[in-house]
Amino acid sequence: MKSINDLVASAKTVCDRYRAGRMERETVREWVLGLGAYPGPHGDRVREAMEWFRLHNREPVSDDIVLVDIDRLKAISAP
Image (cartoon, rainbow, N blue to C red; front, top):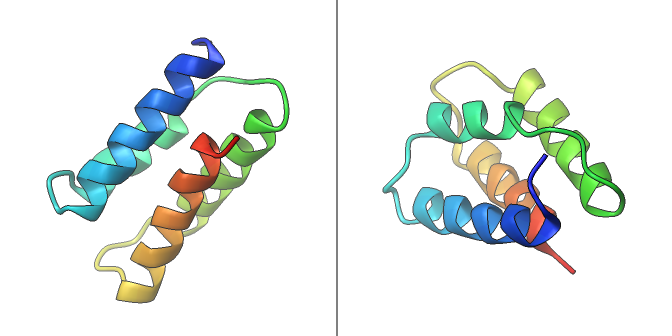
């Protein structure tokens, strides 16, 4: 488990790169699924993102799915 500050910084970076098309969805999915346990409220958001990416793991994905991906990533780094 990384510190919350590291988690937030990493989530912002991953989100920005993914949104800009500089990171593949599968890489993002693997990153999210590789996150450890964190205390709330960030931990709750990490678990939600993990569940989302577990359920939506088939390619290709629609633009709507990508928008939810981004929302899940932004939620991890929200205060």
